[in-house]
Amino acid sequence: MKKFLMLVFFVSVTKLFSQEIEINKIEPGNWWQGMKLNKIQLMIYGKNLKNFKASFDNPKIKIIKTYELENNDYAFVDIEIPKNISPKTYKLKLQTGKKIAEFNFPILKRDTVKNRFQGFNQSDIIYLIMPDRFVNGDFTNDSISGYYDSMQKISHQGRAGGDIQGVINKLDYLKDLGITSIWLTPVAENNTFRSYHGYAATDFYKVDPRFGTNELYKKFVEAAHKKNLKVILDHVANHCSDDHPWIKNLPMKNWFNGTLDNHLEANHNKMVFTDVHSDSSTIKHVEKGWFVRSMPDLNQENIFVQNYIIQNTIWWIEFAGIDGIREDTYPYNNQMFMSKWAKTILNEYPTLNIVGEVWTGEADFLSTYQRNNSFKKPNTFLPSVTDFALRDVLIRFVEGKDNTYNIYNIIAKDFLYTNPFHLVTFVDNHDLPRIMFFAKENIQKAKLAYDILFTTRGIPQIFYGSEIGMVGTDDHGSLRIPFPGGFPNDRRNAFDEKERTEYENDIFNHIKLLIQLRKNYKSLTHGKLIHFPPANDVYFYLRIFNDEKILIMINNKLQNQKVNFSSLKKYITEKNVLTDLRSNKLYKLDGENKIEIPQLSCLILKID
Image (cartoon, rainbow, N blue to C red; front, side):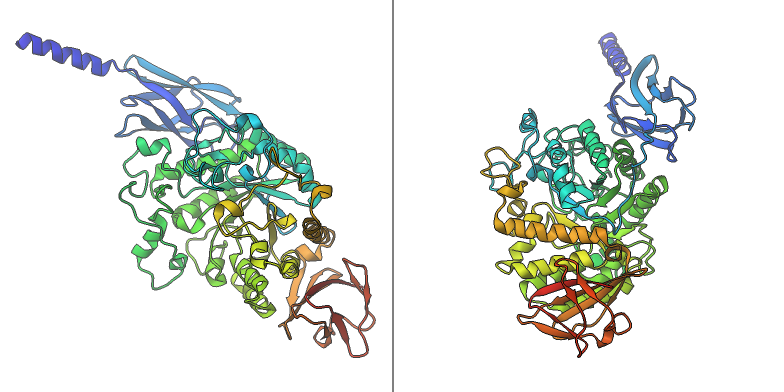
């Protein structure tokens, strides 16, 4: 019996020590020669990742440190890549005893094309696309084995079939409209609940195959650049999907803030970061709360999670050559970490721009998220934030709840921002009902909102389809309705002027002309903004750049009004001729120093 037990013990021990070490995946899967960030952390997925030594087949790639985890399906290896190393595929070797596992790790030569990492600014017009709802350019990827959508049978919430190839196919349409920058909602793999929207990743390094491939995304960026169109990456640092492989096999116990069954619910009180009376637990609740149960909150206090997110962001920038980042749900992230994240990215790519989504319509709270603002610590390093304050007042204006004074009042709060000209301005997006839904039948009020959007400060953004007056509803699925003409069996093609309705062409031409004016006159993008308190619901303001002066006048009344120009006498005299940039009509001040403005209209006048 004793011999038998000894034999069992010997066999068990032998089997234990004979288990093969495996490497199944490394993230990031490659890096580049000559990066400022040349010390990176490899996340290794495999089996029996313990008691190992790590090395490369080229000793110039230095192993700084290895990390064995309680879960031996994962390990981390810190490496340093010399700046002058030859670009080629190297082998990472993990060895435990006589057992060896090897994995290819390419170090690539950086792309030196000049128009990468351009950034975006107030000269740009951003076009926001939800790829699944825009154009189906490749029918072969509509259904992929092993990929599902649990919302498929719920009205408007299933996948429509749009993809990256569809966006490529419509670059000329966007160019004709006058767009300069394209923002796609996330294209990372979302093999999960309501997968079409892209905000719940199941693989941070892979394009969802129903959208295309990594290489196709890179091809899209290159094709856009050839047409002088920029690309903005929609990035999500805060959370992933509850179907991410990490959920079933945690790399670390504290990889997430809590568990599926035991976590903090989302807390939307974004003011807590600047509220001098906030308790630290309130702040932690915002940062650690789960946006929704299906989107587990990443623990950004974990240094390994931090490294993963930073490297993933830089990997996509370098791989695809994008020009900017839109960072999702910015206030819900750990603020100390996001400061580090943005600083690291802008150190690597100084010409890049980052806009943080900060969903609050209160300018005093919103402004604190823009970089170098003295009211919030730490410094966010964010060049831009989303201007929900202006959006909200423009929508209330369209609904008839606010007047031009409310718009003036919001713009008057620009002293709160470090750079109000770098705010991303909009009237609708993928999370909010479209402006035409709020306008109902009042198309002229919607046009006035667009007039203001394209002539005031900021970087204007248009939501796909809003340029043809798409309406939708307040339901998320149906406000993201497919673009007519982008899908099989569509009865007409609204990308074609001849197939658009009179109403659609009216809105399209109105917006297209505003974009042309913005491009033609630098005062409308970079010019100083001087505005005046509205009287009788007439709001007027000047945009001045060097000797170029443009006057914008909005009459929100249902009757024509004569405007007294006495407050503008330092800018306009009876000698000046004012040219309406849309109709070419000429105006001069009358004997009473007045000009008449038609009801519910906007005049954009060049002062000569």
